[in-house]
Length: 250
Ligand code: IPE
Ligand code: IPE
Ligand code: MG
Image 1: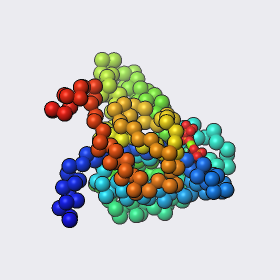
Image 2: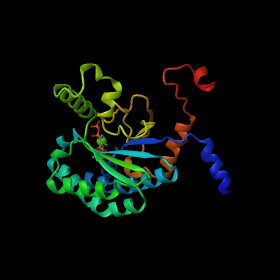
Image 3: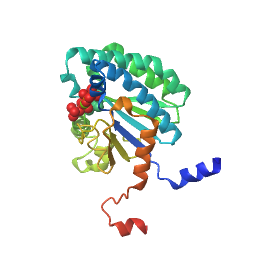
Image 4: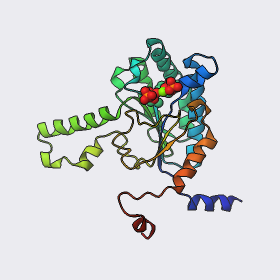
């Protein structure tokens, strides 16, 4: 039985890097006659489930969209509850992540967060920095346009300081300054909640990712749903600009 499972894993294409737009918390709560915040709280269980699923499937990197640069426009009360929840989950869960050899990091413009939250993030990152298992990245105050702009700014500053020349600016060097550059390329981007858009998530990194959209609202997304997304990925033919014949006969 164990060998069957091992064999199945060898034959199946497992995405090395999965990202998820965790959407639908508010609608999930409203459907139950509760406030939106109840949906965000329930969504934490789904985060635990996908982290477990990613470890079981031996995925190398999991990147979760928790708060976009546009989400500041929500009612103040909802934003403040989301910040409190983030802080609470961080302090409560990070030891468990560490025990499971998970490397934790937050991507996004952290400067807008409270000092307390920034310190808690830094502490969690430091604790897990040497771990060699799953890399769990949480995107908070993240925007794909911000990410690319930030990379361009860093290159521009290097040109200004005569560290590099204009000719050193190319796709590879810009890539090196975007978030997640050290991780395997993004293979699979999942969005829950029924909308078909990227909402300014990993614009640069998603260039050749496979997309998986599901109507399931984030608090209802569980280990089985995650496995199903991986199974769908296994059925996709990734051509990267080539013809079907080329990739089949390679
Ligand atoms: C996603 O769920 C969580 C965040 C954006 C923080 P939503 O809060 O967007 O839920 P819906 O889309 O309104 O249902
Ligand atoms: C995307 O969801 C951001 C996160 C899941 C954190 P939104 O609910 O903010 O996306 P839009 O506004 O519907 O595009
Ligand atoms: Mg939403």
